[in-house]
Image (tube, rainbow, N blue to C red; front, side):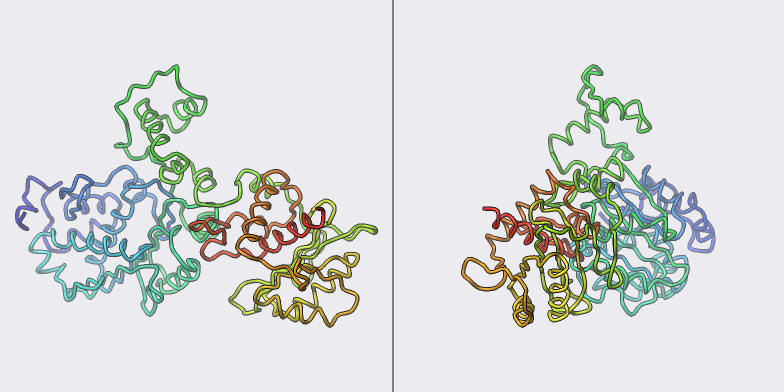
Length: 498
């Protein structure tokens, strides 16, 4: 298909505006931007053809409600990335010196997004290509307009310096919940590049009640960021021709039909098909409300219901020490025995935390906790102090890595009761098999006796503790040091009770 055939009058939503100032004026209102997208921009459809970018329901809702900074929680294939790419493309042509950065979650997604932007340019009217939209450069994920010095860059969040060194007027963050590495740090660097008054749009499908996107969503209103939620039924195409008998509707389906969603029978039929095709991933891929889509998505290894219920029932610690690094939940009781478990770290400012968990040996109830970026010697000092405070508690220190240094310091202390493994050596040895066993036991404990845990920090770590291809560990950007310390404490308790 030739360029002229692409832009035949019959295939347009309307004739193109002249390459002058009139279309720029239209860009000042949502209605004008929607009209300009339909008139100027072409996209590849799901069917594979080229069509005008005529705003769908979700795109219209976003356009009318976006102010300056927005975060979008959506079902899959709602067209929001496409709309934001088109919106920012038009703005870059209209306003001289506009720097636009799109950040995709993978290099493959970045390549696809840049091709989409390139397709928009390639199908502009020829007069615009030679005038307003004339390009000075168009390669390697970068498009620069010669006439007004605006530029569009598409990068991957996996790139270590994504967006750094720029002053950005338009920033599009795509699929934030699926960014690898430290997503929060990468996003902070990008936001620092955003010019005062610049536009920011963060959008993603859900991927667990943890991580950077979840945190940005929950904190959005406090930071003046507009939240947009688009359930799957916002898309009119999501229907099925299967006939549904009204008498077969479940209570949940009846609530969707007669409640605010007001679903039609063809949408209920589609929903049933989603359940068959996607199973437990349905609410992740096709969100229905902004609470359950987070709670029921992601690969968290702990059962979400008991976790959330316990978080809602927590009391404040009875005491905090060391600027909050130490929290006391239950004070020492005379005659009772305790265990202090330690998961040491190196003490680097940006590294893992050194952690201690104190539990009652008979009941397993959490009594105290330490979380600090302290080096081995300082952790050893406070481990000894807590062990003495809690009736000479048994000190179970993970001997792996930095644990050897902690144990060396403790050996010089008199009167301490330090755990020894079956091999006679000081400290708890975590192996691949013992790690899986102690984490599996902690899963059972959280599902059946979550009231034994009293730390909000620990429970929040549990929420971001995921299964990564068979290995249970913290999600990207999260920590699991408290989880591992508690797992060691409970494992030692079970061992002593054999």
